[in-house]
Image (cartoon, rainbow, N blue to C red; front, side):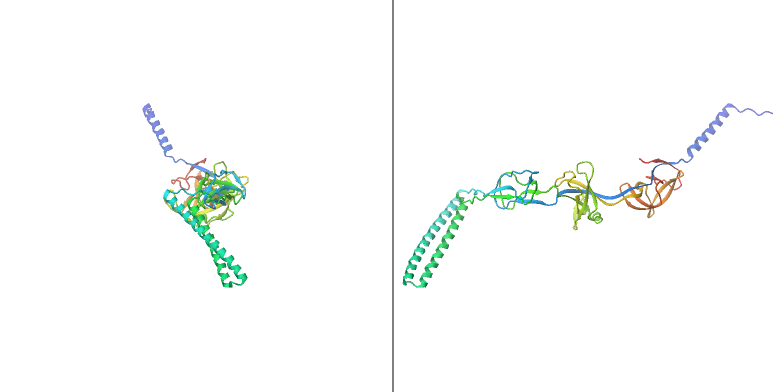
Length: 385
């Protein structure tokens, strides 16, 4: 007896069920995880530290006014070259201060009193001189004793000293009163102690200046150094002679330099976040000042100090490293699967870290491995950009 033919509707439903099962199987089938990969290679691994710094001329000479007086307008300008011994400023004696009527009257009265005392002293000296002459004549004729002659000689010397004192008192009174002719008229020339360049003028226009007031800063721009404030825990890793680079100086490229001194005294500085930090001044100098870009005194720059530099190290991207307990590990891609491998690492730079064991040049590792990645999982790698 022939079997009954299946109905068309049954065939349609059967086919749909098979297709649905195939789609579900395809959807549930585990797919390789898409990851970014990188290749282990050999190259430079540089460890450096950068911080903000300032340029400064090593020896800045501050020229100050040696005397009080009227400072004449300074002719030199910032940037001008000067030589040692060149006159850069002139100071004239200051004019007498203006006095009010009462003070002026008192000062004039003092001048008159001093003048009268001088005339009196001069009269006493003239009398003492005449007594000296008469007594000397009598002594020569034998009518005066040696004691009498000594007395008149001493009286004359005392009168002459009194006249000198009265003359000085009159001069002081005239100066206090501002009498014309009481000024000395001596002009003081302020000279540069060294050859260099004018850096700054504290006062250019004519004015009355007291003794010791700063007038001009002079220095040699070729004698330039960089001062950067590093954290104390970073400064202890540095030593004189280490290579460094000046960055962000206003142009392109980096200027080679080297460390010359690490100051032994730290100071407290409050950061922008309000945190107290111990900072140490690290001093650097340019390797080739003659060919370096022109920088002035007090320019802002960044100083990058190279702590270590390994040019041919086996290196792994720092983004490929993950923690494995107290050790470091990477995920290698072997046969389309991720395999965890512990590595022994060394110095770390900004992008790469030196590796001594666990991987070799040419191995492919996963960069930025997700937390869900486990060893043995299938992966589909794509080279990291």
